[in-house]
Length: 391
Image (tube, rainbow, N blue to C red; front, side):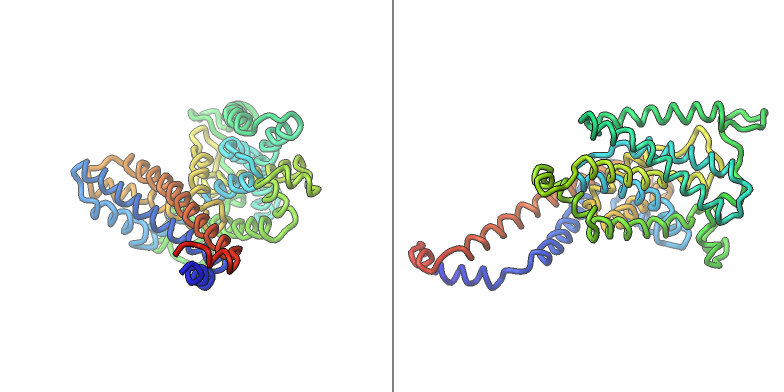
């Protein structure tokens, strides 16, 4: 009996990558089901119909090209933010400073947009993007150096750098970046020249304003975010740096014993993370506002942490998770029109989704681990041991 069971286990054993993909899909579907179920309970407690709420979210997001444009425009910054978080996480670190890094990136990009106006449009846009990236890198370099040189924990230092970044940008708007128009009441910079703005994706593709309105800030930064996903995947999966970063994240001691410079890897991954963070606020800056104001978009850095968790720190998963959260954000208008629910209910749904994903993936991971342990024990069992085993 034991021999037959061991043979059956061997025959049904699948490659590990097949199990991983199946487990990921199972966990994702389970998490979505749990989140929808718990969300329905909360909606019913408010006296509303869950079907009306979910249909309002879906129709608002995918009912027409305008809704889809809003979803993608919301997803772009979240992709950059989550990628910045995931790169550090793969190296065994927590970059909680994406918020501050993208704020400084917006300030440095604004400086470039107002300074290099003599450049032709393509070079000016490129300069603005590069300066935004460099601003994020410089701000990320501080906690990275402190981590490598003094051992200061990156969670503490990056959180402190967030507060400093807000104060630094407020100072810049009061001094070097302050608008030259003395009649302005709100603190902001001068308006950027049109040649410094990132083109609207719909206009570039020949779509009219009725298909995707100008109010939908869908720019070429969204395709750039998808390209960044491919770049991060290639970096982490197909390069020596990526291999060393993953090895450091899984076991720093073993990686160091294998000749990996732990400090060098930590510094490089933090700089790459900061470069990605520098793009987070540029869609708002260069596709919507056209200037840097004191009321810039916030919380994108912290939301990116949730997106990274939802996407399991994989670039493809991050892109899908960002689109999912972009859909929920777009659904606020539909929920407000169709129901009497407060829009904060969608924030609750986001939280439930993240918690459900964390729990579901942990459960599936343990199930797969037990299955592999059974397979290994069956493969290592000799025929004599199998014959002596009780039926």
